[in-house]
Amino acid sequence: MGSVQVQAKIKEQLLELAEEDYRVFASGLLPNTHNLLGVRLPLLRKMAKRLAKEDWQAYLYTGGDDFFEEIMLQGMVIGCAKCSPEERMQAIQCFVPKIDNWSVCDSFCAGLKLARENPEEVWDFLAPYFNSQQEFELRFAVVMLIFYYINESYLEQTLNLLDAVSHEGYYVKMAVAWAVSICYIQFPEHTGHYLERCALDDFTYNKALQKITESLKISPETKVKIRSMKRKI
Image 1 (spheres, rainbow, N blue to C red):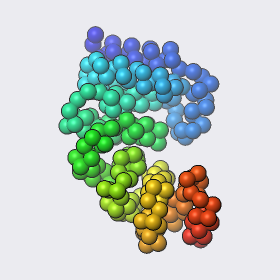
Image 2: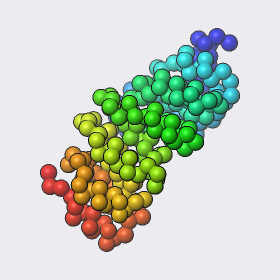
Image 3: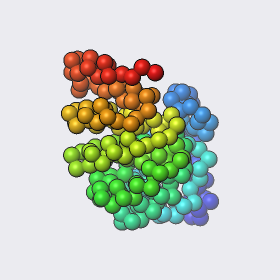
């Protein structure tokens, strides 16, 4: 079957799985998403696993980008395809420019277990993205830190990278705030010292504090302390 026929078949399957009520609901969570069909994520994951067992390279490099779900599906295939680390990183590099919303970004990152298996190589691979001026390329890099590098081995390096992020994009700031909050929840003493001297902008800093206080893992006493650290804007 040719690439055009494969694309048409996948579009047809996605259209069959689409639910209008879910499309309306999901659209409310994804601002500026005009190309949403309304296919639930578990169904996309099932499709991705099947495609990953076929000629996934041909699919990725000829796949359609008309719908949100088509892009999401490609990201999922990259995560579950059987291939070498080098092949996967090449596919990631080709895919990242297609990310244009937080949902595709975060779901894509969650599937890249490659970072858990090859942390040093992926750390080096991510480095250039922290210099990107593209909002979702930078969010991609930050969310990868959240999923794979908030641990004893990488905590200090992760905090240093987060502190150096400078971008006005809302979804970058929210990702950095999320990352700092997870650092605090898992390593409160070390991250607490970081917060005392960090260079985060006021919005990101206060959002990080807010996310810390929203965690069920933080004691009421600590939440009082964290709230007292809020900067007045």
